[in-house]
Image (tube, rainbow, N blue to C red; front, side):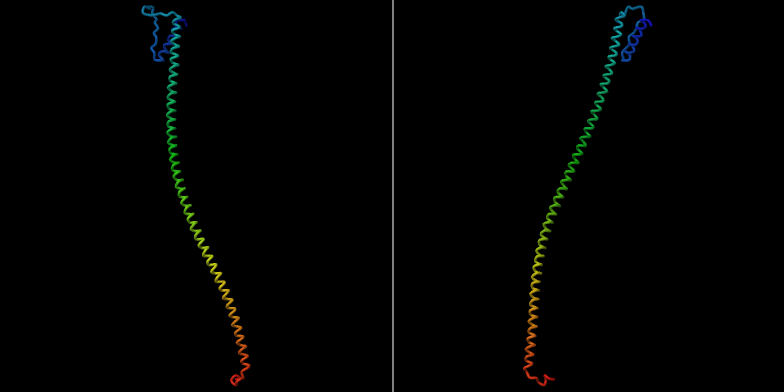
Length: 194
């Protein structure tokens, strides 16, 4: 490949790069009539190719960076949206939990009130039962005293019966003696003998 062919190939490569990025290609003139053209020497032409290539490559690099920035920005937007959704979910969950807590507090309050009422009722029942117990104890003591009095009365009556029985037996004995004694003194009549 000659130097001119190599240079033309380089210009063709640059044209491909330009077209790839949506730019118009440069025209290579292969005529001898050069009246309307500006001509570069080989060194300037080489610099021009190098500068164009570098410019296109940098543009390509910048476009890649811009694309990456756009993608990163979209990714950040998506993540932000996701975080917002999560935040809304968390807030909803927090509200739900707060409502549950309020409901539980209310239920605990009701249970405490019921428990307190039950305790008060039980205390009142206990007081009533204690009063009944005292009344029953008083009755029991009263009946015990009454029974003791009745037992004492019975014992006293038994003593009286015993004493009266003894006295009656003594009286009968005495009466029999007196009668026997009288019978010995009085003469026996015929009627008695019969």
